Image (cartoon, rainbow, N blue to C red; front, side):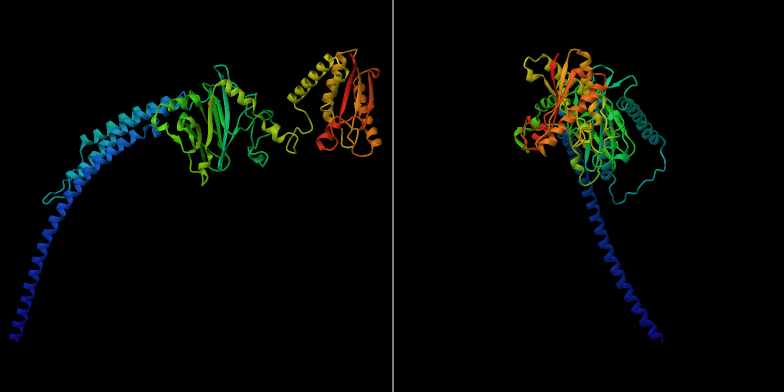
Length: 506
C-alpha cells in the first residue's frame, strides 16, 4: 500500500512538473502577444492621425471645390429679394458649426492617439468637473442664442404673408400689388394655376375632381372663369409673388432652390410662401457665363454651353415615389413686357375645356364678359356696314342667332344678338332692313325654302315684339339658292346655314 502511494505521488509530481512547463511556455507566448498588441496600438493610433489630416483636408477642399454648385456661392447666389438673408444666416451657421466640426474631429482622433493602450498605463476616472461643465454648457448656449435669434428674424422676414392692404393683380404695377399663383402636387407632376385678369384664384372642392376638372374648381364661382393652367411658371422680375401650395395625393415639397424658398405640399392643408425674384433667367445665365464650370458643352445640346441652356427650376424636395424625378418644371423670370406677351397667349381653362359641356353650370346662358364681347363684335360689324359704299358690303350675318335643329324656334341664347339689333334700330331711326334665311342643299329644296322663310319670320317676329315698327322690316327665305361656300363639306354646309340682315336704308 505504501509503495502504491509512493508511485501515485511520483506520477502526480510528474504531472505537476509538466503543467508548470506548459504554464511557463504559455506565459512566454502571452508576453510576446502583448508586445505585438502594443505595437499594433501604436500603428493604429498613427493611422488615425493620418486619417484625421486627410479627412479634414478633403472636407475643406471638396467643400471649396463644390461651393459654386451646391453651397450657394459664386454663380448660384440667391436670385430673390430675401435670399441674401438666408445665405448670410447659412454662412454664420456654417462658420460656427465648422469650428465645432474641426475641433471635435481633431480631439476625437487626437485622444485616440494620445490615450492608446500602453503597458503599465491605468485609466483615470474623473466623476465630475464643474469648470469643464460650465465651459461646454455656456459657450454653446451663447452661440445658439445668437443663431436662434438671428434665425427667427430671418424666418419672420421670409415667412411673412402679404400685408392686408395689398391687392392681388395678374399684372402688378403699384407697390402694394402682387401676383398669386397656385401649385398642386400629385404623383408625379405639378398642376399650376394662375388667376385671370381679375387677379383672384377661384375656390376649389376636392369632391369635384374628375377627368375634366383636375383641380376640383367650383365653376359656379365666377373667379374660376378666367383662371388658366400653364405648363411652366413665368413671372415678372421685381414683383412680389405669393405661391399657394396644395397636394392631391401624398406629401410633396414645392422647392425653388435659386430663390431660397421651399414648402411642403400637404393634402388637405394649403401652405404658402412669398418671394420677389430679382434676376431674370437671361441675367442669371449671363452671370453663369463668367464661371469655367459653365463654359462646357451641354450634354443634351452640344451646340450650346451650359450657361446658355440654364433654367430656373421647380423641384419636389420630398421622396414622393418612383417617379419623383419627373416633377421638375421650368421656371422663367422675364421682364414685364415679356410677361404681358406671355399672358396674351394663355387661355382660360374653363373657356377652353368646360364651356358648353355637361360640366358647365352656365351652359344655357351667357356670361357678362361674353355678352359684352358679342355686343362689341356686333357694333363693329354694324359700323363697318354703315360706312360701306357698296351695297353688297351692307349685309351682316348673325353669328349667334341659332335655331333648334330642323325647326324655326329660336334658341334662348339668340336673344342677346337680336337685342343688339333692337338697340341699333332704336339708335338709327331711319334704318330699314331685309331679314334673310338660308339653308344648305341637304334635303328637299321646297322644304329648305320654307324652313329658311320661317326662320327669317321668327327673327322678324322677335324684333317687332320688342317695339320695332314692321314697316322698317322685310323678311325673305332663300333656301339653298344663295350658298356662300361649297355644300360638299360639313364646314361649307354650316356656313351656308345662316341668317342675316341687309341694310336697305340708313
